[in-house]
Length: 524
Image (tube, rainbow, N blue to C red; front, side, top):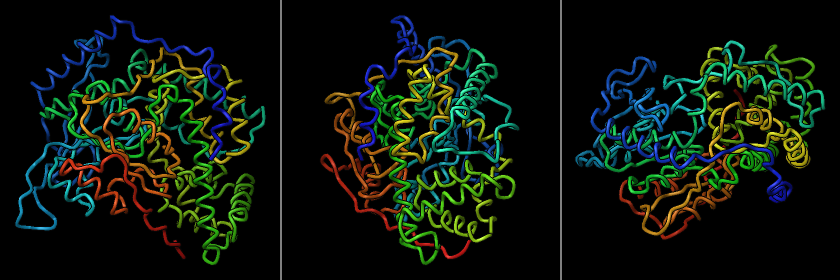
């Protein structure tokens, strides 16, 4: 795909007028000392695990606790915040040999991405067949990063006002619509500052990486075994750069491009371009199953069916809740995971045939989840806005995305509105760390990537592979699921198991054939 060429020439003009001051030498030194203080405190205190009642119904084997970290690592004796942590102990049970007791290898800490996602439910993954060998050898540990859930939660607006629907989703917005969204972005940025105060500036990826080292120490692990997906790969890479001697094994699944010039404005442009290709993949699959869905026997005809539904929803929202914006969001989710494709296609087909309920079921806002969704969005915004420079001139956003939307209209403007508060962000920003390790600094690490991943385009995996010495890249060819470790591809899982259980990796790169395409659904 050549879409990125449209904006790669922007160069140094892209971030004109952006403020991102590096930490002073004194502040950087204070943060290093602060991490040492917090780590020593965590080593001494550990984590007291008990009931997980606050997380809802949980199997008895899962236990929860908290670990304290400084809000500001430059002031480690100042305000502390508590991160919630979950754990299921290693089972020691070999799923292939009931008589063999598997020795424990330590804790495997996981982050599912975001920013803004919680890993608190991760330890339950050990119940899945694909994870039983890993669950036998490792304590499975999840946690909610700073700002998420009950870990010093962030908020930028009243959750009761978070879900606004039905919403529009113009692929080529008018000037009046743009002005309306600019006003909303400014108000959202002000809301983040008002509701979070001076603490807001301390929610960023560098602090997430520092928190991870404190968690390692609190778990009693001399070295960290970590698996990050999506955004989790970025601060995992920061950790590898900041604390290479503390790494035992690291898995980067669906790797984000860590190039400082990409954080985060350019990464979002790349993502919008990649989603256009993934949307095309989905339409091609639906067209192959025209006899099932009746949405068109070519990708172009499927697109016309989708646009017909969007136009109809603009006039009369389905169930009073689902407009073009909700439709677009439902199909955007399917760009992450192809196992969503069958029911999305079924719902679209049913709607066009006169039954809106399946579409309402998948696309209508779930008001009961508003508080969680608002919190996740607040953390996403704070971390991405704090992490690095963003254009502060609307004309740059307008120029780059108008240009991109001509060839990649599916997600481009939706991505703009998601990130536009960063143009008006009210607190100082970080300067992105140059992720890079040299020979002998870092143990071998494993990078997993699907070749057609839209949320984390494949170029990011190649860039991370280039920057981390002795990393190994395993690629699922001609596939686009976002996060492939422990999924349906046995070849990928064999590499994951070999690395985590035996420390064994291919020489430099390996590839796997794609997992099977989803099968069409003939009913809901």
